[in-house]
Each structure stands twice: as C-alpha cells, then as structure tokens.
Length: 362
Ligand SMILES: Nc1ncnc2c1ncn2[C@@H]1O[C@H](COP(=O)(O)OP(=O)(O)O)[C@@H](O)[C@H]1O
Ligand SMILES: [Mg+2]
Image 1 (cartoon, rainbow, N blue to C red):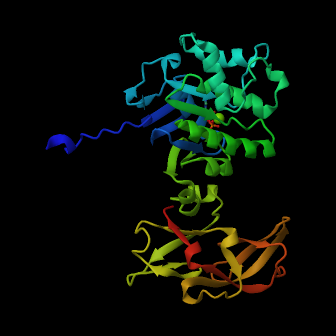
Image 2: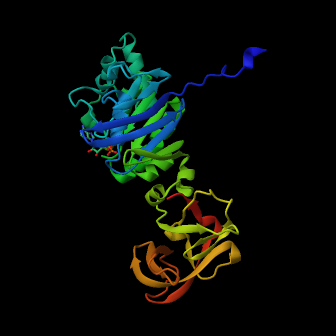
C-alpha cells in the first residue's frame, strides 16, 4: 500500500544552484541565484556582458567558490569537491585546443585531466569524435581544421568523460555569424541526441532562443526569469526582461474601482483579473503598433499621435511617435519599408491589437 506514498518518487535534478551569491570585494557578481536543471535539459544563461554568467559557470565548475549558497550536481553538494573531481565538462569562450597536439591527443587530454582510466582509449576517442560528427579526424592537427571543426573538437574533449553537466561559455563568439548560426543548431541537435544536460552561456538572445528548453535571463547578477524561450519572448515578467527582448514600449497602468485598466493611451481592452493584480506596466513591441484604425474595434487600443521622427533602417522604417494624450511618453514603431509611411509631423491614428498588449511588473 505504501509504494506510492508521498516522497517515494525522488527526482534528482542534474544541477541545482541554491541561493548562490558571489562577491569580488565590493562587487556582487552573482546575487542569490537559484536554478534547477533537469537531466537532459538545455538551459541558457542569457544576459548582457558583465551580468555574472561566466562567474556562475565557474562556480559550477569549481573554479570559483560561492560566497554563500550551495551547488548540487546530481544531488550531491559539491562545495568541497575540487574542479577535476566534479562530473562536468566545459567549453570556453576562447577555444583552447593545444596546437602541437593531434585531435586525438586533444580529446584524450579531457580524460587525463580527470584521471580516467586509459584502457580502450582509442575507442573512447573514436566514439567522442563520431558524436561530434568528426569521424576519422584523430591524426589531424588543429591548424588544419576550420573554426567550426575546432570548436567541435573542444566539445568532444568536454563530452569524452560523459559528464553529468556540460558547461558552454559563449563557445561560438569567436566565429563569424553564418558559421555561428549553423553551429548553434548543430550543437543543440547533437547535445539533444546524446541527452546531455547543458548550461549554455550567451549574450545573444537568438542563440539562446533557438537552442534552449529554458532561458534564464540574468541582469546584474540576478535571475530575472527562467522559462521556455517563447514565454520569455512573449511574456517577459518584468520591465527589464521586456526591454532586453525588444519589448521597448512600456507605459504605467492604473486600476479603476470598476475593474477597468487604464494607461496613458486609454483604456486597455481587458478587466483587472485578466492579468496579474500586481502588474504595473503594459508593454508592446515597436512592430506591434499598426497604422490606421485596423479592424480590432474595442478589442484593441487606439490612439492618435504625431510622427516626430522617421529613420530608414533598411527592411524597416523606425517611427518615433508622440501620443496626443501623453506626449512625454514617446513610443517607437517599426513599419515594413515597402508599406506607406506617414510623413514627419503628421498626426495619425494607430492601433495595437489586444493580444499584443502585455501586462507586467515594473
Ligand atoms: N576575478 C574577478 N575579480 C573581480 N571581479 C570580477 C572577477 N570576475 C568577474 N568579476 C566581475 O563580476 C562581474 C560579472 O562578471 P562575469 O561573470 O565575467 O560576467 P559575464 O560573463 O556575464 O560577462 C563583472 O562586474 C566582473 O567585472
Ligand atoms: Mg562571460
């Protein structure tokens, strides 16, 4: 009878950070960060330069000690475990292959560093190279490989010990854009195939969105939101995340006693209760504003505004708008270049569809 009693099903996450803080002198590089990564999950740490991403990875790897909080790998607190005894693999920003060593020796280094038995070494290396789609590359030297191939050797070296957690710190930032786009998708597919648990650091939101199961947005050492990519993009939890994912138009909202929600542009097309009661802002993207009345009727937000500036940006034209009801809250709009663009100083009607308006906390 007791076989399904409470607590019988213990799920151990591959990685758990529990209120981790890291201070360097007066700088708090990471603040009270808690994060759990499931086995086989791909989680990105996304945030601007200096927000604490690398410090977080280095603490997981054991290269930095947290000032407070704890880190668990496969359920075990690793606070006192040295880096080479932690069950992790790591690929750094600047790839660090040894130029004087063959590909096989570079990969073998991953095993030696961890003091793993070297019997059947050749087979293990062969397997690792096959898993990153570089079969037969054992005897090549790094200089004879493309940037993308070199990065895959670095990945093979990190994967060769079958680590519980794989840490990738902006591994593509040194590569040119087209190669980077291709490699991100290739790496993500490959790691999914292997079932690797991965923490991937990047400041590039497209990279994070295209690869991850969940994206952890970090700002100033703090975790702002950790959810599926589409959720972060479409439902940013706060103004900071919203700005970071391009939802740059933000206006304060007020709640009326009768349940109506107002912003400076007018009444929002929903009642309080529809959104979180704590929401204090409404946000929408520049390309969510449409010229004209559109067909939304009362299900959209309509306002008049003066076009104060128009900037041709190639595929799109940026319009800065001064709404008549709140000229001190300028809005930004993007229009496809081919479409008719109203001239500067004209006053027009604009509409935002109901589903493009997002309530959030400040
Ligand atoms: N060894 C260190 N000593 C002092 N400050 C550091 C050290 N490492 C990182 N920092 C500081 O911690 C903050 C976070 O850095 P980092 O984790 O490298 O950010 P990111 O990888 O997101 O760019 C920055 O302000 C950085 O200057
Ligand atoms: Mg970094």
